Structures are given as structure tokens and as C-alpha cells.
Length: 521
Ligand code: GLC
Ligand code: CA
Image 1: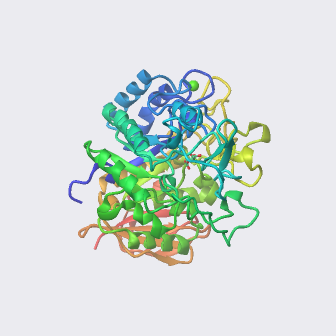
Image 2: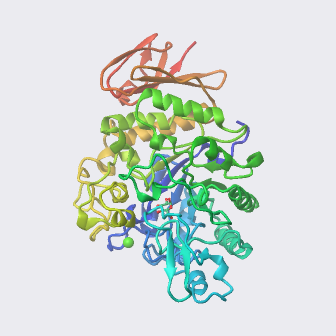
């Protein structure tokens, strides 16, 4: 790799700010809390934090309903707190990535208040108003159209009715939103994660979506149609390219896109001649069944279709999906960690993943997420993966002095930062060792990824840079495996006692054990 950009070799850490650290006892995490915990992230070894929305918001969708894009919500602190966060982050050589929510604002945003005030208002066309609704649905269930009494029209919302969609065909909207990006870039933020990038532009003729032949009534009703006219429209790439050129007019910034699309479509978000997102989030491992063949298949397919020069990235979890330790089970979460941290490109870790946090059980009376409230009991809720980071074994887990906004995970007495920091065998220390290894062996970031082979529960692949060769062996099963490797030395094992062990041509792996071997040939 010749002069890689900082984000290419980065491990990014997602902070869901409500749940990271509360500093003032109101039970909700805040900017001061993040500052207090930055040294933890330095010890972990990550390079950047992405902080989910912290802007002024009525919190109908916990910050993804922005009422002022250039402000800080008082729940999280003040603009001075933000400036301090940025400074403290940079002082530690960490980067700060913000969330940008361009598809929709809050219905309390002054733009929308104006837009809905009359049909003649100059901002009327900043949102999507129609006399008649079509069949487009909200991603949170139900029709995507909301009737407005005062002006006798419907407006469209891809999510809650409190989140009206902006009209990105309107040049004034683009200009206003690009000013927002400049505001934060001028402050010195290092980039953006763009919310629902593939939804930003809709069909200008508002054609009805066709039915989804694979829909079953157990799913969210949002899945009942194929969303061909309200998502992934060709014109979206124009918008993304404009965002990118704005970002690129500042040195060393990164543009990341949240995109849930099939692989082939996802790749188009790198843009023509790579003028799109630097990193269209790769969610393949979020959706992949946990077995060697499925993993080998998605990893090699992804690498194969990556456009020339495009930079790969990998994700195991985020604030919208079940935690990895819950999806694959606690014993396999170390295998997931070793997989993630030995794949090429940029990696994103979801807060708590590094200590093996699991989804929490949320009682009906504790439900916060509007996705669960609107469609209860079908697994739409995201509260289970959003519970407070567990810092220690005390009652409130060191997260707050007050009443936490979501319950503390029941396993927090054993799954917490304090306990794990002092336990050499913990998953936290595995994450640290793997991140350090990635730094020490740049081939893990930018080197070749050899063919992935599977033999029953054994997944095996090679990372190399021409002169050195690392072999990664992962046991996805519970039974021991006798595996062929090359003679060499274990650099990092899921069992830290095996680090530096010499291996011959064969190696014994226990159930759920993984090793990275430097092959001496
Ligand atoms: C994205 C966010 C999700 C939010 C939605 C609407 O998918 O990650 O949390 O609810 O957009 O903004
Ligand atoms: Ca607080």
C-alpha cells in the first residue's frame, strides 16, 4: 500500500452516545461521558470513533430525527462540550466521525414547520408533498404517507411520521445540507457516516412499488413491496458524488455510507471512477449464517466484485442489529473477533462488542425503540443491542449514577470492562491483541487475502505481502480439530497462552478456538 489514507488502515469504533457513558446522572450517555472514556478507547487501540447523532432532536427515533443539524442536543451537552470532545479526541490521535442524516429531518425542524405551514411557502418543495398517496410504505411499518390537515396534502416519510423525507431534487435543499457538512468539516471533524444513503432520492413520478413475492406476514409490513421506486434510484449517485467532492475539498476526510442492498448494487456506491462513498458499509457478515461455507462464500464474493481500487470494509454489528455474541453465541464471539480483525480493509466495531456484550432482554415496560412500539413482538426492536456499556460490576455498571434509560444487561457482573481488563483470557484482551497485531503486521490490512478453504467446521485463509505469510485457522464448531498448517509460530490465539507457540505442520484446535500462525517457509 502506498501512503494509505488514515481511514484505510483504521479500526473504527461506533459509539451509540445514549449508552456509552453518562456524566450527569440523568441516565443517558453524553459528550462529557465520551470524553471521560477516551483513554479506554486508546488502550483498546482503535483509530477513530463514529458517534451516532448528537444533534438537537425530539428523539422520536433517538436522534435520527434532527431538528437542527448544526447544534448539539442538550441531553448530550453543549457546542462547547462538542468542541472539547473533538479536541480531546484529536489530542489522543483518534479521529472523530459524525453521523449525517440527509434523508429526513425531524417534523420539528424549522424547515418542515415552514414547509407544512402553507402550500405557497418557499420551503414547501423541500419535502415530498402529494395530493394522493401511492403504495410506498414506511420502514417502520404502515403507509409512508401522512395526511396534513392544514394544507390538505400528504407528505412522505421513509421512517416515522415524525421524520419527513427531504426533497433532494430541490437544489436549495442540497445547498442547505452541504452547508451543514461544511459547518462540521470547518470545525475539523474527520468524516461522516451517512444515514440510509440508498434512500435519499425517490422516483420523480412516484410510481407504485410492485409486491414482494418473498414477503411473509411474520415480517415487518415494510417488506411487503419491492422498494424499487423509493430506494436505490440511479440519481442517488449524483448526490453521493457531490457529497464526496465536498468532503474531498478538505484534506484527510472520509465518507461512509449506510447501505443495505444486494452486493452488486452495494458496489455501485463506490461511484463511477470511485467518486462515491469511500466506504459503502459492508453488512454481509451481519446477515451471514454462522458456518464456514457461508462465511467463505460471502468473503470471497465480496472481494471478487470489489471494483478496481475500491477499499474493502467489514462490520459485525451496529445499533440496528442483534449483537454478534447473541447471533453466534458467546463461545463463537472470539472466532468472530479473529475473523473480523484478520480481514482486509477498514473495520468497524460496535461498542460493547469488544467485551462480548449480548442482547439484553427488554421487558415490555422498558421498551424505548419506536420500531418495537409500532410493530411489537416481531423482533423489530433495537433496544436489546443498545443497552448501556457495562464498565464495572456495580449495580449501574459504572454507566450512570441515575436510572439508566435502558436496563443494564443481566450478565454485566462478568461481562464488563473492569473485570475483563484484568483478565488476560478475556475477549477484551483478545480484541486488544488483535488490533495491536493488525498494526504490527500491515499485511493484515492491505495484504493479499488467499483463497478461503473450509473443511467441516474449519475455516482457513492466508494473508500475505509477498515475503511474509500468515495463516488464519478458525474452528467454528464445538469439537476439537486436527488441522494442517505450515510450520511456524502462533502470533495470536484466541487462547492467549498459545501466543508464541511453535507449531509443526499440524495443529490441534479446541472447539471455538482460532489461531493466527506466521508460517516460516
Ligand atoms: C438508519 C439508522 C437507524 C434509524 C434509521 C432512520 O438505518 O441506523 O437507527 O432508525 O436510519 O434514520
Ligand atoms: Ca447524561
